[in-house]
Figure (cartoon, rainbow, N blue to C red):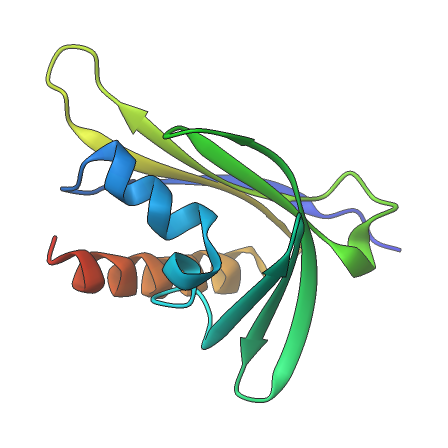
Length: 128
């Protein structure tokens, strides 16, 4: 199996960290922008897009700060995706930091996908 490439993206967003955290850590919040529907049983999340389903485990979370998921079909690998809320100490500007992995040649596609999803999130939040 090919080794995946880690990439990070930062998106400024105008929303409070506590509100943002609800949108990145709960099934109802994630289904507003990340997937068509999201269900969870404890730490196991099922993401549904146009008829296809993917399952991920929430491997860590810190209130109002970050969530990290690992796809179940990637459980034996070091790969994950993380959504982190960052607040600038001085300006109090809020950003979302995305950490994800993609196979070589698919990084640009992955970044474009995140661009679109964060755009959706900003629409939902009225933050555009």
